[in-house]
Image (cartoon, rainbow, N blue to C red; front, side, top):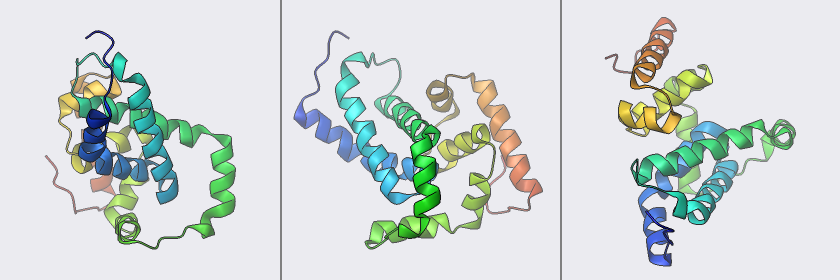
Length: 171
């Protein structure tokens, strides 16, 4: 595709179609609603600015999710963020219904166990079960082979099973 320009209408469609999923994924990575909102905004800003580079080799959802994961990983790498999160954990202000929903998800034992997995296992579990991506889409997003995705899923399930987490279907 040649220099594809993103119209305001098309940009709004992307936000409406993928915004909630991107916010949820950001929250699952960052474990803080306000940071997740920032990451979501940063993700869509990058989508807007880099849309001309989207070649259509994967779905829009896959491409946007890859951007989101990279944004979240950059947030997690930031030493500034580490200092702020450590010093400011008590300042979380969860007032509206969305924030309460995220809080309920955060308190879920299964999710806590998933969040304690190694990052490479955690991300495939989150994408497969929470984001409903196929193994092929996960492989595209993470730039790894499908067999590697299957291996990571298998190992993650085994770790969860060994920890006595029974709330997940083991395939």
